[in-house]
Length: 227
Image (spheres, rainbow, N blue to C red):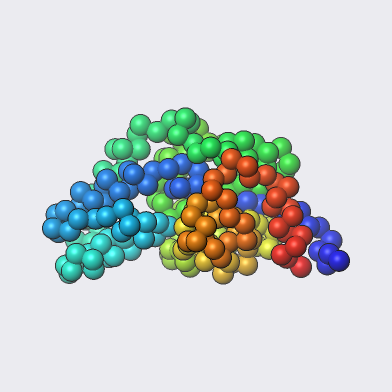
């Protein structure tokens, strides 16, 4: 028996990197170059641990791995230089770089009057969305410029729901990182994990990618997981 008289999902919040577009290799190239200045070889495994984390927090993590101490000024300087390297690589992005299934899914959501939001730690979200020609499809964009706390803190998702004027329980978050799934769960939202099933085991629905993701699937999740 359903206790929810309106079981339909009203909003979907997408992470950016690894969900809408794959710029992980851009991040990795940029971070690796800077880590090498501290005589540290950044691995792909290290880069995975930086998913969903703010730029400054990423610098702190890399510095700890490299066993170097950084002042606040140096932290900011490294973060800014990393961003310059990353943006230079992102200039090559086009709509062809949108990950499989995402464009189709967003069009389905818009056709069904479901609100669409972005919830990302990136401070370059609008720049990337513009390159992908997706900006106009998002009702709300909350990124690293709008929040104080990075994931797994739920701030980014709570703010996105508020800006959409939606109950968090009526929102689904699409994520590829454990920190993002944890943040969404803390916000009281349903979660779809795209990628590694073991890493994303706490998500309500886990898929290898968004190719087969539909609104019908989300509404079924809502019926059986929310009251």
